[in-house]
Image 1 (cartoon, helix red, strand yellow):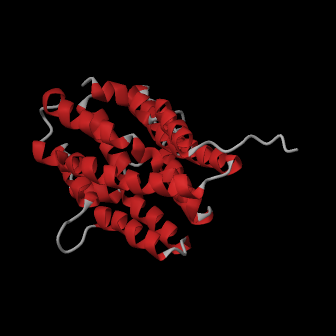
Image 2 (cartoon, helix red, strand yellow):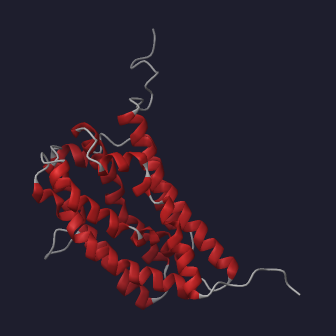
Image 3 (spheres, helix red, strand yellow):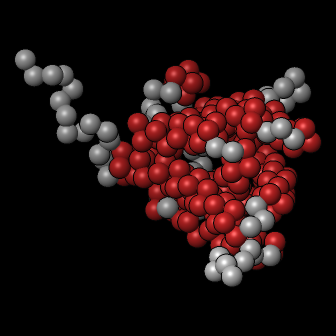
Length: 246
């Protein structure tokens, strides 16, 4: 007789997945300062510039999922995520909306797209996520997307607070958050349904939980890097001379 634990029911599994919200980056001290209006303009711009690297890599992550997925119906629905970010002839997309957010915060378009402000820790974490999506089974890459379970709350928080807390940011720059409230809800519905359908043994469910935790770690690590650079005043290589000694 096997001592392996039995699988959770779909409702139990969903509840376990949702319980990981406590590790979502909305609880990170950097984000909490942002939500209270305590960041300086430079600290807000640092977040926008570094988060842009994550935004531009989302379509690459989703493209990796599509390339590995043999299920036509899944691909047909999942590809909308790429359109949402890259845009098409009818909508410039989320990457362009984030660019406008940068401009609203005072970051010139060219500076944002140059990625000159992206911290090594941010680049490392985002690249790890893209590489995971390339190498992992497509089912696991789908499960990693479930941080979107928690995203609408964070977008609504910014929409409600930023106009008062950061009045120096032009309001037209908040369009990204407005769109993602509905888009994330739609994506969650699909990603969650797939995860509940695909991970039906306890071992598989435990793996899905670990994968979601990995993605939460990626998002948390982005803010760790920002905290060191913009709050603690310890950007990368802060203790090293700019030029080698003669």
